[in-house]
Length: 496
Ligand SMILES: *[C@@H]1O[C@H](CO)[C@@H](O)[C@H](O)[C@H]1NC(C)=O
Ligand SMILES: *[C@@H]1O[C@H](CO)[C@@H](O)[C@H](O)[C@H]1NC(C)=O
Ligand SMILES: *[C@@H]1O[C@H](CO)[C@@H](O)[C@H](O)[C@H]1NC(C)=O
Ligand SMILES: *[C@@H]1O[C@H](CO)[C@@H](O)[C@H](O)[C@H]1NC(C)=O
Ligand SMILES: *[C@@H]1O[C@H](CO)[C@@H](O)[C@H](O)[C@H]1NC(C)=O
Ligand SMILES: *[C@@H]1O[C@H](CO)[C@@H](O)[C@H](O)[C@H]1NC(C)=O
Image (cartoon, rainbow, N blue to C red; front, side, top):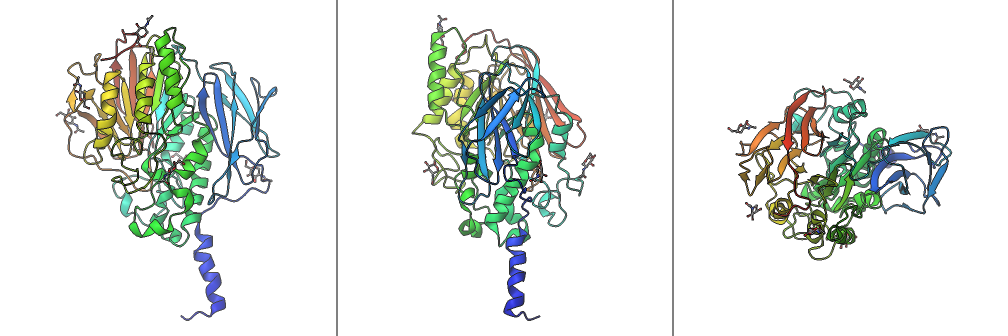
């Protein structure tokens, strides 16, 4: 068939510009979309959302009854970057009463009243649960559930071909069972736009469209629960297929969208509530060295959670300029800033206030099969052991795995009964277009590994001495593996 010029132009426009699956732009440009909350500090929550126009003054009204939103907080924080259609708005609510249902309304001519449960203060010993969700990805036309190219998904046996994301569905159904979520990296998989042939001529729009879709899909969860994010390689990847490097849109490089979206919502580190002066000094030092959303910490009830950046900012970091992943990203801090932060942060933890210490990051060093990040192990493992981190949570490998408490690849002889070494898990099976990673060859300290369906980790702080880790099958809610870690936590400041 031969096209005249007149016929060809609309056709090209149809396959190129029209192909990215953008959500419709609301008529009212103040309409909040992609809402997301974060624990921002003691008694403080960051409320963030995007709009299709810049806001002069983003505002949030809030109160302890839906009919009486008596307080209002505003900011001038409404920012974007060259390839984005939306502006990221952030307002921080401070002085919140702890552990209380707070009603809030993002100020707009088209918004509704939502609610969240405000953060527990450090030292509150009430039991609660959180979820660890890693490597999740968008669903729908640019995600994993659409029929077509199934080549990367043939290890998933029972995926409903409808537009159904089982992990987000399960998080919605169980929303009253957990208080917040951590997501250490690989959020939308927007860089994987290249996986859908329809996107091939329209990288910039395809990339942004996936981000808009993903954060809209997440909003019913993240507008209700704090969603604590840290970076993964997919927040910076531009060359999964080498010839796309030249097509890589601005927002896709060097964690640009990730920084725009989470840079002003994640906390730095909390001031210490310990009575010990050394702890206060270390916490202040950690606060000065933190680089949210890359590395930071927060305290919630009986846990201190530290998020690390396994992508950049340490020796041989995979995503840094010249690094093994070829992503030419970062650095985001000064020389050794991340590791100095981590040492000060972990040293500041007073176990009489927060008995539990958890570290979350993207790339694991304990995993079955391939995907072990050896430079990460060299950089971080000695500090995790030295300061007695209880549990370390990673993803990157697309399945669920549990390891015995281990240091330097040697299982702690005490097992789950008051080990000195951290317990390690991989919770990277939440669901994304790349499909599951097969369970690799058995690894001596591995006790559980699952890649038959999408799954995630639910972590319950039972009391100061018992921590339960459950792996949940997203499609059914079934508990696939359950374990309880016992720690005596007898030392106020643990250094070993
Ligand atoms: C108002 O917001 C809803 C989503 O919350 C959207 O579907 C609708 O299109 C918006 N209305 C206008 C006039 O923009
Ligand atoms: C998604 O799955 C749930 C549970 O299986 C079902 O109730 C719901 O209708 C499905 N949604 C779509 C869009 O297929
Ligand atoms: C404060 O904590 C440090 C360890 O961080 C410890 O060496 C010191 O003895 C403690 N001081 C008091 C007064 O308990
Ligand atoms: C990435 O962004 C950071 C922070 O804006 C900047 O300091 C760094 O130089 C950038 N890296 C590259 C390779 O452009
Ligand atoms: C813990 O592992 C590190 C390597 O990551 C090693 O240097 C250190 O000696 C180990 N500590 C103990 C007590 O085994
Ligand atoms: C790995 O081997 C250990 C010891 O034989 C066993 O207990 C564990 O179940 C195995 N793990 C997997 C995932 O096969």
